[in-house]
Length: 252
Ligand SMILES: Nc1ncnc2c1ncn2[C@@H]1O[C@H](COP(=O)(O)OP(=O)(O)O)[C@@H](O)[C@H]1O
Ligand SMILES: [Mg+2]
Image 1 (cartoon, rainbow, N blue to C red):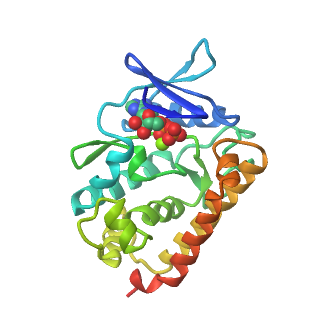
Image 2: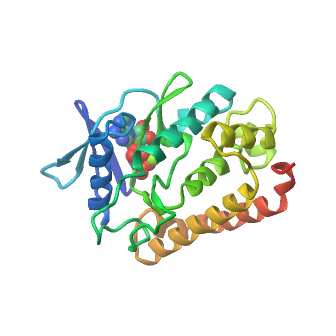
Image 3: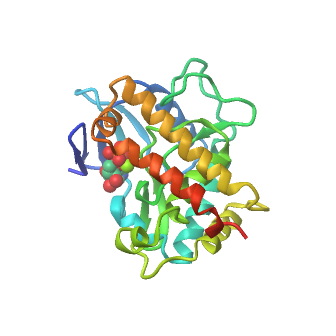
């Protein structure tokens, strides 16, 4: 068993992984088939639906989940993660989903300045070989967004937009990190010419993700409904407040 959250059992079967489908999975499967067709290797391949109605994905060997946090503490892992995100955005640029394909919390197709972003690009959803990220998992939250929104999402977690105690206690930092330096390093490795406006993008993305979680919770979708019931969604509001109050840690 790879994941035993109450609502979502993810299991390995031989060289495959079986995951419960989402109401919008058809679009995600189309995306994975596109990535396979153009040879973007880090994404698992979509292999069909099994007899229990679960999606079948190829198994990507390596370390994933909570092991990912420690991988981005050092510069090499952080830089490699940013480059992988850029590679993904290049790979997805030519993808135009079938009109009507739904996405998590969004039904309209991508606008001209949008691509299908991964939507949950954190170190825990990558597969690592040492400090090299070789796989990108967990495509359920892919949605039309501007590529910079995936950058902003990742930065929340890897710069990170968290207090010193959280960094040291939970995110594997030996000491409080130089957040501005890390944000700049990530932005440069991704290929941004400037970090202007990036902190606002992070805050905007925190709000967008929060909105989406509330929308899904309102539809009774799990785990978002549980996040709302247990008050976890309110901690997101605290995180947004923290980002606003500490922007000086990220800006020159
Ligand atoms: N295709 C895959 N190859 C290898 N491991 C996988 C794969 N898909 C999921 N996993 C493992 O299962 C865990 C949970 O799966 P994930 O797709 O991230 O679902 P979620 O986080 O939504 O429960 C991952 O952190 C990873 O360890
Ligand atoms: Mg995951």
